[in-house]
Image 1 (tube, rainbow, N blue to C red):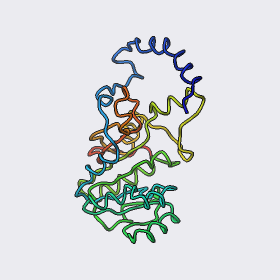
Image 2 (tube, rainbow, N blue to C red):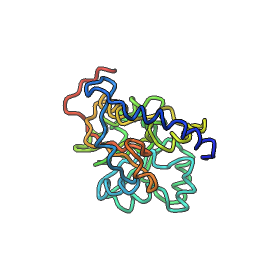
Image 3 (tube, helix red, strand yellow):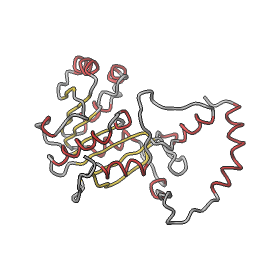
Image 4 (tube, one colour):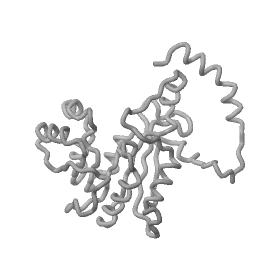
Length: 247
């Protein structure tokens, strides 16, 4: 929570922030990655996903939103249930077997499976998919690269299939404000932070070609400056030219 001491600490930073804002790095500076166009707009994550997957066949990974499954099913807030009303077909995958049993008993939906995507391959799925939705999962994995490589194989086995990854943003303004108060605003099960560049770099290393990237935020933070929105959405397809050098 922001208190008077936090506000005072922030005010003390303003002169230094002003000096940093006036620094102009050379355009070819190796550490400078320009995402100016990305920072100029943002979307609301859930509405964007529903629109993007509308009338498509979707493989939804991490669909249970544990540990909030029961609460969000009861309140009609679970994204997976909303996708079932708008997408042509949705198959859910999650690693939480207990939450899956609860979900099935509550919703009577059995188009799903308990599976560790880091160990999954294209052979696990007989269905055809247009989109793999990998939302707020990558940062929870000890081996995110291994999971992305498996997802690439699934994409390749489904002609034209796109991978949609969403992750929290390392430069979130809300997280930065918490840091001013000596606190870290982070899910206790997260292993990684991602920025636009590190997410794009990891996807490329795993054999994907970026089609588009968006920043997302809730209504109150859609207009925060630059790259300080809450999270990132990246849409990718398997690269046509790719050599797996990291195996």
